[in-house]
Amino acid sequence: MVNLSIDINGLLLKNPVMTASGTCGFGEELVDFFDVSALGALVVKGTTREHREGNPYPRITETPSGMLNTIGLQNKGIDYFVNQLYPRIEHLNKNIIVNVSGSTVEDYVLVCEKLSDLPHCTAVEINISCPNIKEGGLAFGTSCPAAAQVTKEVRKAWNKHMMVKLSPNVTNIAEIAKAVEDEGADSVSLVNTFLAMAINAKTRKPVLSTITGGLSGPAIKPIALRMVWQVYHAVKIPIIGIGGIMTADDAIEFFLAGASAIQVGTATFIDPASCTKIISGIENYCFENNVSDFKELIGGLIT
Image 1 (tube, rainbow, N blue to C red):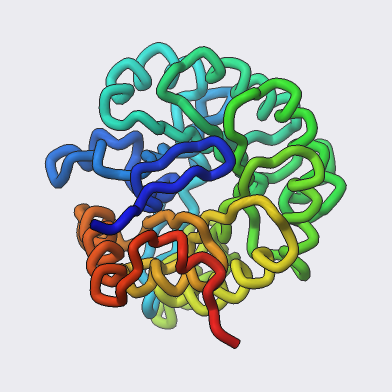
Image 2 (cartoon, rainbow, N blue to C red):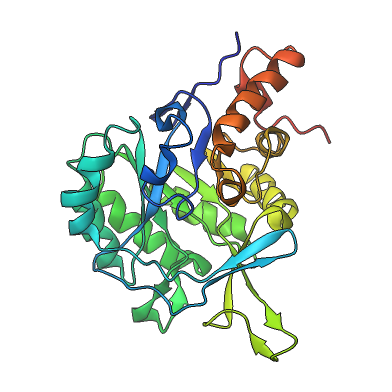
């Protein structure tokens, strides 16, 4: 038997595999393909204070070894989630992690306050890759003071596990990770999508309505691995690795770089059951390599 369970700073997971926010809606989309309770945690779509329509179409396109999206945080707001969605999904998994987005610090705090009484909402993932309106459009996640501020204020309002999702569109991601750790983050998830674009050579126009969007998929994995490795050597809190994880081998690489758990996103567009296959693959890897507990792999990169 291989032990796949892990305690991520108080967040108890049966295995280290989660969905990535925005790639499977609120989990209901997956129930026809596998038992969602088999996941270590279900990370649901980004939720904001108010209803958001999102960006105009087209807002998704394929790219070489990846995909671009500019969804624009489309969702029906926190009140709809609490009153309508949560009652429908609370049975799906004991760990439902809500990705929280906002334009101001007050937005993050209010959303977390409204989530605090939901028993199966065991953690929030604070997405600090959103525009900060009060700071002239600067993303919270690209400034140490801004990242620290939102983390500090949410910490006051949220007494369960707080995961902070970091933007890769920065000069030094380790500095951002250290800033949120110092203000009470229980873990960091990285990386979010990379700012990128696609052009139609025939029309000479951008493919996406917003011109630029977020790049995900296998194309970003080598950069995401590097960033996880850098952050692992800069902070003491656990890391959740994200970025182009398609197979169990990809997940193993993230563990060796320092991740304690991983999130699977773009892979689910190709195979909705990819998460369960990755869980089985991690177990098989450990068995074949005489690893009794997958945690032995964390930070095990040999240099």
